[in-house]
Structures are given as C-alpha cells and as structure tokens.
Amino acid sequence: MSPRVRPTVSRGLAVRLLAGQTLVLLASALTAATVAAFVGPQIFHNHLSQAAGHVENSSESAHIETAYRDASLLSIGIALAISLVAATAVTWLLTQRFHRLLDQITHAARELTRGHYATRVPDVASGTELDTLAEAFNTMAARMEGLEDTRRRMLADLAHELRTPIAILSAHHEGLHDGITSLGPASQTVLAEQTDRLARLADDIDDVSTAEEGRLHLDLQRELITDVMWTAHHGMRERCADRGVNLVVDATDATGLTVHIDQRRIGQVMTNLLTNALRHTPSGGTITLTARRIGDEVALAVTDDGEGMIGEQLAHVFERFYRGASARTREQTGSGIGLTISKALVDAHGGGLTAASRGPGEGATFTITLPMHPR
Image 1 (cartoon, one colour):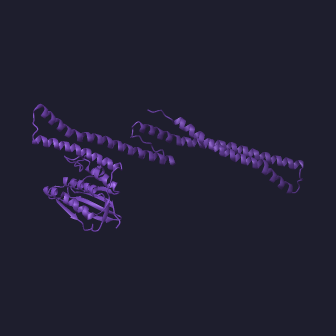
Image 2: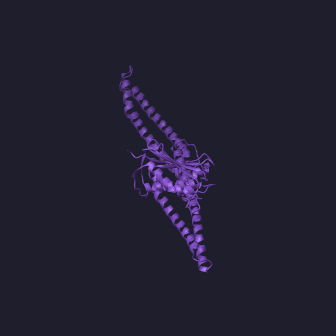
Image 3: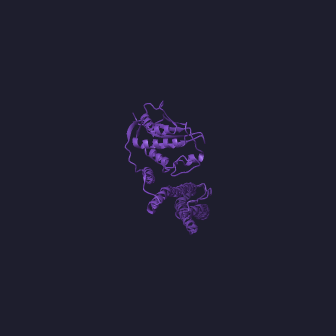
C-alpha cells in the first residue's frame, strides 16, 4: 500500500484557504478602521455642531465624540474577531469536504502508476468541480483498463496465431532432419503455406499499426463509388461462384456519387469485407453491395444473409484477433485482424466503418461511410 498523503493535502489546503480569507478580512478591517477613526468622527462632529443645544468644542461634545469613536472601533474589533472565527470554521468545513476526495484521487493516481487499472475514485457527491475531476479520472482509468485488457488479449492471441505455423514448420524440419519425411511437393506446399501465413500476419500487423498511428500514406484520387463497387465485384465473383453464393451489385442510388480515396486501400477494405461475408454465408446465400448518399457522405454497404451476429460480437468485431461463438473475424488461413485493418484504413480516409445485425441467422451489414468528393 502506498503511503497516504491526507494530512499534507489537508493542512496545505486549509492554510491556503485561511490565509486568503484572512488577507481579505484584514484589508476590509483596515478600510473600516480608517473610516471609523478619521472619516466617521469628522462627519459625526459636523452633524453634532449643527444640532441644537450643543456648543462646539464643549466638554459634552468632546465626550460624545469620544464615545462614538470608541463604540465604532469596538464594533469593528468585535466584527473582525467574529469574522476570523467564521473564516476559520468555513475553512475547516471546506477542507474536510475536499481533502477526502483529493486524497482519494491522489491515492488512485498512485495505484494507476503501479498498474492497478481497476482503481476508481468513489463518488462523494461534493457538488463541486472536484466531482467533475473525479468523473474524468474514472473515465480515464476505465479507458486505460480497456487498453490494457486489449493489449493482454492481443499478445495472447498473437502468441496463439504464431504457435500453429511455427509448430508445423518445426515438425516438418525435424522430420526432414531425422529422415522421417522427404522434401517432396507435399512438404514444400506445407512449408510454403505456413511461411506465407507468418508473412501475412506480419504484414497485417504492420498495416494496422501504421494506419492507427497515422503513418499511412494515402494516394487520394477522385473515384466514382460505382467503380469501387464493380471493381470489388469483379475481384470476388469467382470465389463467390465457387462457394455457390450470389454476389449482387445494386447501384440504383449510387449513380454519380464520387469519393476522394486511395483506390488500392479501399479495394483492400472491400476485399476484407467481402471475404468476411463469404466466410459466413452458406451456399445459395446472397451478398449485396449497395451505396447511397447520406448528407455529405457516401454509405457503401456489404450485406449478407448468413450467420449474423449477437450483441457481444458486434461490440468487439473490430478488435484484433477477436473470437466469438461464430466470430466473423476469424479464418483458418487468415491473420484474424482483417476487420481491424479495414476499420483503420477507413478511419484514415476520414470515414467510418460500422457493423449491424438483427441476430443469429439474420445476416449482417458492414457499412463504410466516406466523405463525398465535391464536384
């Protein structure tokens, strides 16, 4: 447990508050005393001289003026003493109200530096800006905890992804070394496939890291969205036909819509989305490409009538290596981050990528939104 800092915080805040209020009180008291000692008596003397029955500079007048001056100074002294007591009490109450939350925030910050990301600051309902600070701190801690969970899961999944091809390569190398197997066409195919799998994994991780860190170079050109749709169709129609899946382009609402994109990168996104849809659409199913204008953006959608997704999968579908009950991010020969790369690439274009599904067996829709290119 880290050392507590409550007394230091409390005393420091109390001293500063009390010092500030004391300075204000002293300035007010000095002003009031000056008025009471010099200005007030002169005004009182002038009024007393004009009053009937009082002779100026008489002993009676001097006595009255002395009584007035003494009463004024006594009143100011009593008021100052009461104000100091009140200031001390208010300062104590405020510091008692604030120091607990300040101590909790300080303690929570120390715990975060030690890697305890589940630490939160409790709500003390102080009704001050400190509550806003505590809320912001808890939001930051929750995001840090989420990032740490993602990092751990990513490392575990990356180890899993590497383990299979490495194990296969190791087994074949040992077999070749021990003479159990020979380097024939079958062995060469297996070795080439697993080497390519490792290379794709490395390339995919580099692509998503580059895109998410903003280091991705884009060769932006004006493109018709219909050209993007038909190019994606031509690239995937044979694979869809081999699986018995219909690939349909509905460009009814897409005529004349243009976007400012890197054709190669968006083509990579479309290939990933169509491959993902094909993977989860049974023979006889249909994948449809549509596009339409929404405000100043173009929405390009890939819709299938396959397995569909549940709410939990929708919440995590774009995370690296995510695995669900029928996770749509997985493929036996893929890296498991195709959708993650796709989202990062679309984000780099200033757009967005979302997923929607009405549930298992109801298919899914992945929608790319891209800013329209001005005509």
